[in-house]
Amino acid sequence: MIIIFIIEISIIIIIIIIIIIIIIIIIMKIIIIIIIIIIIIIIIIMVLSFDVTKKSVILLLKERKKLRLHRGPRHEFVDDSSFLKALPVSRHCKATRTADALLKKGVLRTSHDLERYWQGLGKHSINSQDIFSSKQSITGEHNMHQGSFSLTFP
Image (cartoon, rainbow, N blue to C red):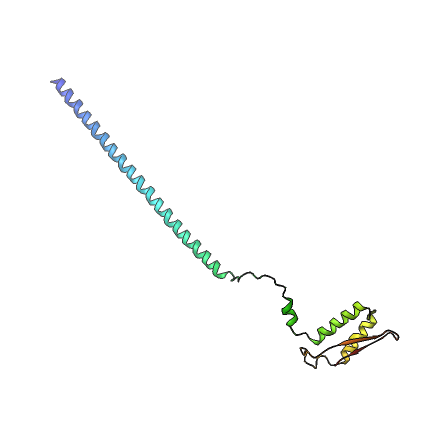
């Protein structure tokens, strides 16, 4: 009888150990499931925070784009001499061109000649006339024998 009793107790102990192992396995599964759920929650939070960050970055870029000055198309430099020739020339510009031409020809040699040229030009009323009139002309004549210079205004 004692042997039967010992066998029964040992079977009960084995069953209890098996039940404890099953409970431990179930608890481990629950813990693993809880860990997996926590990891999923962390991933979701990271994705949502990244999405919020991404949206905020997109909004910042849109605001910067709004603040950026609108640049038009690139312009290319075109040397259009026909357009420049068609522009009206002021009387003062004509007088300056005449002075440059007289300097190149050697008519105006010294700074005293230049001062006389511009003083003689100032005696005539340049500003009172229309500066864009095409009928205006300034001519300079040089008397080689006497070394004098005279301006003729229309």
